Length: 177
Length: 309
Image 1 (spheres, chains in turn red, yellow):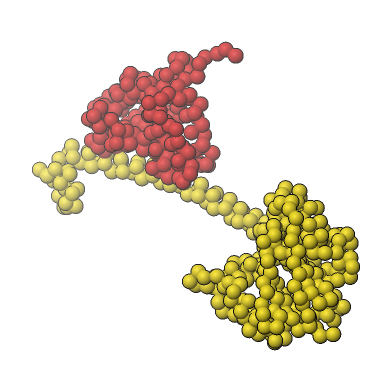
Image 2 (tube, rainbow over the protein chains, first blue to last red; image 1 turned 180 degrees about the horizontal axis):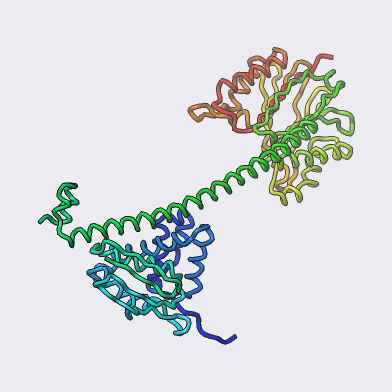
C-alpha cells in the first residue's frame, strides 16, 4: 500500500494532554496510569495515537466541547507554570506570536504539509485586543481554542480572553484585554 | 489617585469612583473575564455532571444485573445444597442394630467439601467412609457425587478396605487430577469383633478398655498418586467406642491462634467414653464451640459404639 506517511505528534504534546486529563480528573485510577504509560516526551508518536487519546475522552462525555476547551487551557497552564512557558513568553499577547510561529504548534507536529496544515496569525491588533488565527491543523478546534485561552491567560497580565468563530470553524477569533 | 489593584485588594467600594478612566476600563474587563471564566467552568462542570449522572445510571443498572446474577447463584447453590444433602447417607436399620451412632456434620458454606457415607461391602459387612474433598462449593459437591458413585460401584467388586480404596483411587485418579482435586479418605469396615481401616489424611480414634488407639493416617489422599494402601486392624468389641472426624474440627483456632487439636478432642472422648454416644458428641461439639473463635472449614464428627449382642 502506498500513500502519504502518517503525521507524527511530539511526546510533549501527548504527555501534556494526558497530564491535563489527569489533573482535571477526566480520567482517574488505572485509566490514568494507562494514559501516561510509555509516553516518552523525547519521542514522536503517530497522529492516530493522539486521536485515540481524544476519542477515549470523547467516548466518556456526552457534551465534550467544554471538556476539550478546559483541557486546552489546562495544558497551557501546565506548560507555563511547570514547563518552559514562563521563560518563553512574558506577556499574554506574546503567546499569539509564539504559538503561530515556527516554535509553536507547528513544532509539535510534523509530516506532509497537506496533512499537518498550518496555524497562522492572520490579524493582530494589540490596541483593539483582537487577533484572527487561521488553523488547518488536524487538532480539534475546541482544544486549540482552549490552548489559546490558556496560553494568553497564563502570564497573568490579561483580564479577559475569549476565542470564538464567526461561522468559519477554521478562523479562530481571539479577544484579549 | 488610587491603583485598581489596591482598591480591589482593600475591598473599599467607596474609592471606586476615585479610579481613573483607564482603571475603570480594566475593572470592566476583569469583570467580563471573570464572567467568561465562570461560563467556561459552568459548562465544564455541567458536562462532567451529566457524565456522572449517566455513570450512576449505568452503575445502578449493573447493580441490578449483579443482584439478578447473585439471586441465580443463590438458587443454584440452594439446589446444590439439597442435592448434597440427598447424597448423604440414610442410616441402615440393620446397622443401627449393631452400632450406636451419632453424627455432627456442619458445612462452612451452602455446599461443603466434607462427605461421609455408610456402605455395605460385598460380603455383607457395614462400612463407614469419611472424606474431606479439597475446596468448597459446587465443585466439591460434584466431586462428592462422583466419589459416592465410585464407592457404590466398588462395593460390588471388593470387600476389604484396602481393595475398596485402591479400586476407587485407581478409577478416580485421572479424573481428579484433571480437575485438580483430591480427597482425604478414612474408610472403616466393621467385622465381627474388629474393624479394618485404611486412612489417608483422615482422623480416627478407638477407645477400648480405657486405652486409646489412634488411626495411622499416612496413606495417600485419593486422587494424588497411584500407590498401594495399607490396611490396619483393631479389635472392636461390645462397648468399644470409635470416633472419626475431619481436620476442620481439630484445626479450628482460638483467639490466640492455637489449634483445637486432636489431642484435646481424643482426651475428651476418652474421658467420657462410657457415656451415650449422643452425649459424647454434644460434649465434643460444645467444647469445640467454646474454644474456637470462628469456623473456618467444614466439620464432620461421627461417634459410634458397638452394641452388646
